[in-house]
Amino acid sequence: MLDVTVNLYNTLGKRVEEFKPNEKGKVGMYTCGPTVYHFAHIGNLRTYIMEDVLEKTLRFIGYDVKRVMNITDVGHLSSDGDTGEDKMLAGAKREHKSVMDIAKFYTDAFKTDALKLNIRWPDVVDPATNCIDEFIEMIEVLLDKGYAYVAGENVYFDTSKLKDYYCLSAQNEDELVIGARDDVDEDTNKRNKADFVLWFTKSKFENQELKWESPWGLGYPGWHIECSCISKKHLGEYLDIHCGGVDNIFPHHTNEIAQSESYFGHKWCNYWFHVNHLNTSSGKMAKSAGGFLTVSSLEEKGYDPMVYRFFCLQSHYRKPLEFSYDALDNVSAAYDKLIARLKRLDVSEDKKDELKKSFKIDSSDDMENSGRHMSEAGKVPAGADSSVYLDYEKRFAEALAGDVNTSSAITVLYDVLKADTDDVTKAALVLRFDEVLSIDLKRAILAVEDESDEGEGVDSELAAYVEGKIAERAAAKKNKDFATADAIRDELAEKGIMIKDTREGTTWEKA
Image (tube, rainbow, N blue to C red; front, side, top):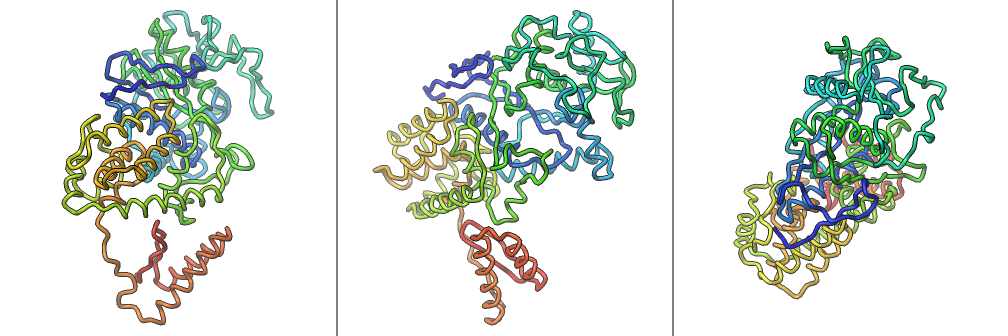
């Protein structure tokens, strides 16, 4: 491992703390996964990008990381608490499909988005509906210990049994407002305002599609129980790092701590890592507001997903990040310049082959998801200047070890390109850094550019027409007239001309 001390802001302690895992050299990391009732918007994906960087940072330093993520496919009500309609059922109604069909479609869509953004798929991904037995077992223990009660045939966690229920969120019971919205009814079965459902057998809606037999009747789990049980199932009773968005702090993560530590009888998770919101000029991006942006919608407007990842990396994960197309355009220009600079590195084909072997890159497919492979910390690739390489490797690690400061890490990347050293060493360092940054810098350095067949077999009149339309579309995009840009794309498609936006510009071919 690199001789670097990792410091993380811990939501539990409300300060930056030195990271010390339960077992030396190993990290158990849990990520709150998506509720798969709709596409993930780019605000959701900011959280997953930064969690991905945290995981890769730990691997970069030399930790053996096991990362587990749940998939919520039942029990998440629209209020994030115990009121409203199950989001999965709402998605099924919206699209006139079964809940399981909705779950599969949006799980696959989420995975596609993750791969587009070079987010490493976790070591274990487990859907809630796969763990019903684990939920029932934990609830039975909580009942036996007196931390839960049955009322109205549902099972509730009794928060009055805990001395410090609000240890994570720093709220208090007086701040909880029940029935503040006209469409949300107070649950009169609860003994205390903050109590939460562990298992539903009856609710305000009777048409829940997914139900299971339990000791308390036919029903389904509450949302919060799933993460505690899935973490226990795959990582044991001591967890190093739990991740999520700041929205999860209360009530979700607060409730996870309550039920897990009551079940285990000891402290459960030492470090809580939360990513702040992505905002627009009108406020936080949210599905409930409608019109949210997805990775696909950015692609349709000509943006490489790597530009959005690069955009996220230039801000600290604990700060709100404001999205605008102007800001994304600026990052896109910076990204294009970086790629162009990397392509000018003077690295012979023989040296490229040596670097591919050093970084275990066997084919172009291995470059599609940068960061999938992780090199051995402190091992100098063939052909690189060892003293320079090790110095900058440690600088990069120290930047990230300072509470995942990706902006400082990117500064180290640019320092390498300005350094007084040979291009092979620079290329090796960029490849190493890209294992964490994962913005396809590998492809710029190692990929062999294919000769373009653009326009082959096409008469000059058609070529001139297409190039003119591409120029019109570029001007429309520059003026933020995306409706005109989309119309030009459709017009060309009707004529059998397919265009593709790349970081080098727009290419086209005749279908």
